[in-house]
Length: 165
Image (cartoon, rainbow, N blue to C red; front, side):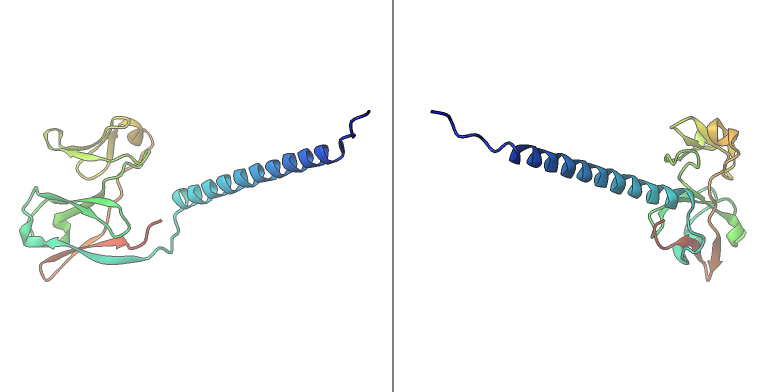
């Protein structure tokens, strides 16, 4: 007695379908992943010029003495170091610099003993005005980003982006 013959057409069709479906799913995942990466890179490399800016309160000017500095986080999440350099009573007394290195985006911190801002990622150094003096930022001619300041009625304000890029 012969065993009943198996339907050989069903197995290859199912395998072909599953192979094609998994290939399409993998291609779709790759396209979605690389598309997301391209959008994020575009936003980082080419920030929109039409971003919204607003004047944000930072501190009472009289509470900061010459040489004092404070850390300020903008509504968009950027960290800014605000330093008082003089006590003439105007916005020119203050300096607001980004705490993000323009080379690779590492966090920059103030070294009072060396009178400089320092980026530990690649030994980048910046003078007190934010100009690069050593490391990859100096070689590329990059400086720390400055933020406009104003003093009104004894209050210090900084112009900052209000939405993340």
